Length: 260
Length: 271
Image (cartoon, rainbow over all chains, first blue to last red):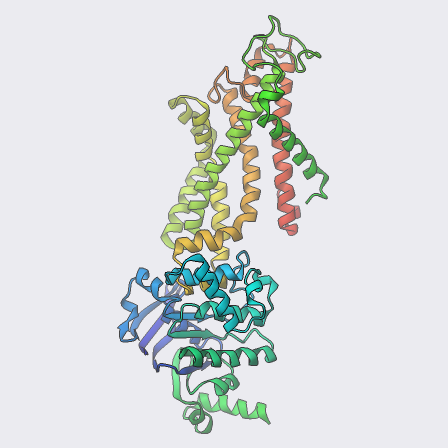
């Protein structure tokens, strides 16, 4: 359903271009969770931002194709892209403490996402928002919907983010390290939830992380990125049992060391 | 904020003036333009602030003057806020050449001595109260624009803005619904301080005869009328002078109080 071909994204600094994503290609199947594994600065987040076409300036996608259901979305105008963001492709972010607007209630934010893309009236949208909060297991959703983000804990906020991202039933979810800022126990809950939601909505998910453990718990296939390039692609078990590249081998060795 | 005695003083004075301005017809004992006496009288029980050179009751004129001064200040500041927020938001949010364009325009406007600009425009237009408001508004938005631009530059980097983009919000929606409410605190401070400036400018203009036109009373043109009688009837000048001083001072005190309440680290600044 998603096919990224030869994607190259650069950041311009003082007149020179720094390549953040270098000729990256991969595919995501319908209903699949694809992991993107890489260290900080490997370009994994920029891949997600490029798919959304929200690369912050001075960054720019300079070449490649992103085929979403067969259509090259890089050729769409910004106006057409706005209709896809949130509706067809949604995203959750790393830091749940800053990714919700502090002056709007969580309800207002979820309802906004719903009303931007679906022809629901206010009441229907609120109803839908409450259902979404229940889906991500927020207790007392009908009351909590009127609360502001600061009244929620980090894990709860990430649930809210998931509710918001999935409120318009997107086909693809980009999860950019959504559990990195959370405690390990909360991390496990969120990962379980993502897996459940993925099955419930038959979502395709791109899960970006530097944590091999999460990839192993969640993904079927994984691509390993290093220095803006894809260094290895394969199923998770393939990569753990027989890493081909030096870099991946080191990663896997780290995992073994940590386990012992 | 209410712990600060000076701020409370400012709030009290302004509340009082605002009530007086709102209830002017009830509070003023005379029609402000009516000649109630043939002489210029010193303050007395009958004429609280005395009468002016034409024999009009100064207390009544001062009460109606409060209406004019506060209204002019308010409307001018609202206009300055609209222009300043729009330009500042667009410059800060979009960045790039839009930002360069707006920022240079702000610099040019700031480099221009605004009092001469105001005088030149006012000399061309009919000097009436509406033009005064517009002209003051059009020449005092730059501070707000700069401030708002800075706030937008800061806030647009936060991830809730990215999240809003990711759910498919248009830039305008993000500018007004997502960022503006988060930038309101410094804007309110700027607006309060802007009121002080606008009221001062209105007084100066009226004093120079290019502002509010007689017989409509404004504190500025009352001051102008008083010039000729400074020696014989000093209260003519002292009363509107004190009123302007108190009002402007109160706005500054409130503005400073708000600023400190919003950002305690800025205690040292601006003092």
